Structure formats: structure tokens, C-alpha cells
Length: 484
Ligand SMILES: NCCCC(=O)N[C@@H](Cc1c[nH]cn1)C(=O)O
Ligand SMILES: [Zn+2]
Ligand SMILES: [Zn+2]
Image (cartoon, rainbow, N blue to C red; front, side, top):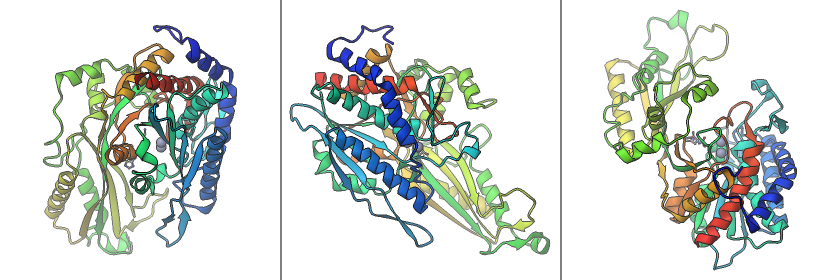
């Protein structure tokens, strides 16, 4: 599709033709990768072996491309029951080290979220199945498809015996879905080694906001995750024997959780909005330009009504305002049936998505103060403990950087349109870690469409997105070379 830009010529045309002609092979490799149940979330030996096998497959693929591949030892994951499991080694690979060319490093991950057909998948999640141009399977869009699209782009230059326009590096891990264990440590360790020659980092681990219009992501929210424990004792109680004479931990917890956010989505913690960056008129205009059909978005999300009625408000509340979500209660009775228990100890879990210019330690204090106040009003004899177990800062890109310019040009060539300049409401912690540690430009260049359903049942990537995405990466290499 080259609707509103001139068709590619010369090398680019050759590259695009090659990708079109070999698309079935590219889909076949994706099928082989999807067939590996590389689930990092469930810490069991069988799945960990699959993850190691997946790492081996990817390393072999890179070696066959001619890359120098180093498998960086990542140690062991200690489990709460005292057991440990190996963390798959992190792949550090490189192709080319011409000092006249820019060095672009691609980050991706090979692990996936759990998936079982009985959870509501129409097809087997680990058998890539194509229906109407949609390639269904766990990991197709998150993140095996995009990792392979980058490999497809590199392999096309190799197959055509053409010089790679840029030096390419890869950082490919297998524990992203479990919190990228060991990755930050490796980035620190390799700062003066593997990463010293890296000029740019590209991440393709999120989605477009639209089903049709490609996007470039310029920022993500951060996250602070809280646990609030309310304890009477370590054992449960019979509600016939103790009901009526206790401060029940669950009643305290429900009141605490119920005090956090109102029905309009506003966070009720005093001071939480104090440092949120004010909206500028220029920023407002950027939301107007985004291709988002609210009705389509609502229908495809299967939600009756969102909290906001305009595109601009909806996007601002997803991208540039904090949000508070309540995730679950550990220790609560949650199975079917009617057990008459009073849980003795419960832990509520919630998180606050952070935006510029919120200060994480201030947020932590505000949350604790607020919960202390609500709890003290209840005069409960239980014990409450609040802890912030995870803190990730928001990430903002410098979109004036060369790689954003190169990506915009490549998008125009491949898709015939300007990209939506989007942010992402979720968090990709490694982006900020790369930016702060290596101090090089980080770009997010997503390939998948808004309805790909990452982490969900029936995850898919459209064949079109996968193949045009492979072209996009190849076009991006050429644009980067031109700008250097
Ligand atoms: N579209 C990319 C999504 C990546 C993702 O799901 N990230 C997690 C990371 C996280 C944040 N807090 C705990 N884990 C997310 O929930 O945003
Ligand atoms: Zn991912
Ligand atoms: Zn994911």
C-alpha cells in the first residue's frame, strides 16, 4: 500500500519485493516460534525448559544470519517455596561494526503470558492459525512477531547480498512477562561493553491505538504497585463462631480499597494530582489528530460505556493522567460455592499509573498517609501494613531525535500515511532503564494493531501488520543510514 507517497525505488523496491515473495516463510517461522510454550509467568520446570528451548531457537536463527551471539548468564529465579529455576540467558547479538554506520539496538522478548484453550481461545494458542489474514496464537503480537519482523528485515538484506545500512544489535530476553528479571543488572554490567557502541534503541512491544493507522509511541506511564495487608490472625475463622464479635479484616480492607477512587475514576488520595504536568494547548491539538473511532474502540473492547465521551478526554486519561486500579485480594475466598469463612488475613493489591511529573516517593507517602487515616477512622483492632512493592517511572521520548524522523519517513513509505503520535497507558520498564543507563535515544515503534489482544484470549497479529512491519524495519534501516 503506497497510497499517498511515491512507490519505493531501487534497493528499497528490491527489499520490499523480497519480503512480499517470502512472506509465507516468515509466517512459517512465526508458527515454529509460537509452537513453543515459552510462558515465563508460571514458574514450573516444564515451562522453564520451553523457555530455554525458545532462547536456543532464537539464538540459532541469529547465528544463521551471521550474527555474533553471546548468551549472557542470567542466574536463577528464587521461588517463595525455596526452590529455584534457571532464568533463560539474555541474548546479546551483533551484526556489523562499521564505525561509519549508526548502531541500532533492538530490544524484544521471547516469553509469553500463560494461555490455555479452555480460557476461551477459539484455536489452540500454541498452534499459529490463520483466519482471514489474522495470525492467531500466543505471542504472535507480544512479542515474537515483532522480534521476527526485525530479523526478517535483517535477513532480507543478507539474502539479497546487500550491505546492511546500519550496524544491528539485539537484546532479547525471556523474562519480560515476569518483570524482566536480571535484565537491568545486565544493562548496567554491559554499559561500557555491549552497549558502548549503541547509538539508538528500538522497542516494538506495544500496539497502535488504531486498527489501521500506524503509530509511533512517544511516552508511557509508569507504575507504583501497592499491597495493603489487614491482619487479625494467620488462620481463618468460622463466621458462625466468630461473626459479630470481630473487626473482620476483609471489611477493613474493602473500606480501605473503596476509599481510593470514586465512580468517575478520580483518585481520592489527597495531593495525588498536585504534580501532574498541566495540559498545554499544543498538547491538546495532538490528541485531536489521533485516528481513534470511539464507537469502534468501545465495541471492540466490549465495554458498554467508558468514563469519558470524547476522544481527547479518553486519550488524556489513558496517557497523561494517573489512574488507580484495584487488582485483587490475596487470602479472600474466591472459588465458586458458599464457604462461610472469615479470612483472618487479607492483602489488597492496587496500583497507580504514574505520569510526568509525579514524584514516586511523594506518591508512596500520600498513599500511606491516606490509608493510615482511613484505617484509623475505623478504630479497628486489626493490624494494617502498607508497602509499595514496585515503582517504575514514566518514560518520555525525545521525538526530535533522528530515529523518530527516520521511522516517520519509513512509515510514510510503507503505509502511505503519517503515523499517529501516541503514548501508551501501560508501562515498559526497560525503556526508562535503557534511557537512564545507556543515555541514548529510545524509540517505541509498534507493529501490532489496536485489536491484537496482547495478554488476552485469541491474541493475533494481522499478516499485513507482520509483513508490512518487516518492510517498515527494513525501510527504517535505510532511512537511518541516510540521516547519519
Ligand atoms: N503494551 C505493552 C504492555 C507491557 C506491559 O504489560 N507492561 C506491564 C508492566 C508492569 C507494570 N507494572 C507491573 N508490570 C504493565 O502492566 O504495564
Ligand atoms: Zn511484551
Ligand atoms: Zn506482554
